[in-house]
Amino acid sequence: MIRNMKKYFKSTMDLAVKLKDNPPNSKSSFLKEYIDAHNNIGMLEMGLDNLHESWKILTRGLEICEEEEVAEYGDGHSRLHHNLGNVYMDLRDWDKARKYIKTNIVICNRIEHAQGETNGYINLGEVHYRTQKYEDASSYYEKALGLAKSLEDEDALVRQVEQNIETERETVKVMADIKKDEQSLRKLKKDIATGRGTPNEHKF
Image (tube, rainbow, N blue to C red; front, side, top):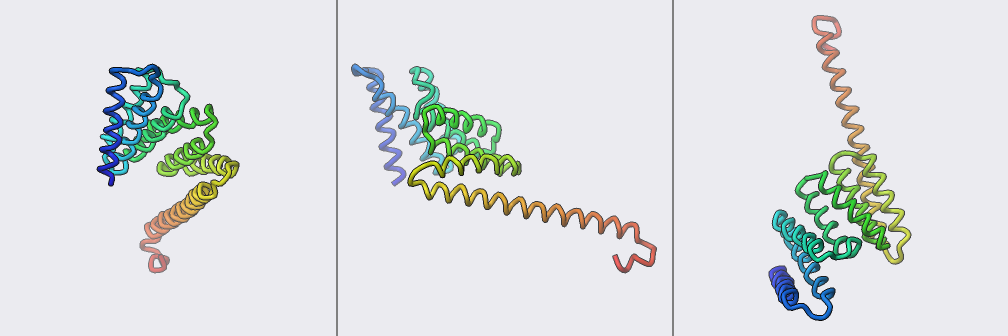
């Protein structure tokens, strides 16, 4: 199925190239399809864990946007930045992941695409969660939750954000317990070292 989808999107891309070489009266339609084809194939490659191939295709999509002077604040740019943010997250390149996710959030906010903005904040929270910046992660998840609750018929999105918040809180609790145990262990080791040769040695 995935192979057939890739074949379809590549056919769309090939057709768009032909239209570009022999443009119709309006180029906006074929450009949108051309950019969307890059985005869709990039997503498929990401789903197959071909991250570098996905990065190459999505980056080419952005280059086409620049070459053709496509409006910076549009859904094409938004999707490409969103997916590149995900690719960089999977590649563990946190700085670039944040950069592309934040750009996507700005675009979604400008074009009033609240669902896309919500997903952007979820992804930004995920980046901070994975880098153990739990306070920042919580802040972005809360922003995402506020936006999700303002949307109609997005109960699943609200539940997703609430689950992320719950997971983050549980992780913070576990990390605090681990830190407390580590401190107790360090104290015990110190007491053992201090107690050697004294009546308290056996007790420690």
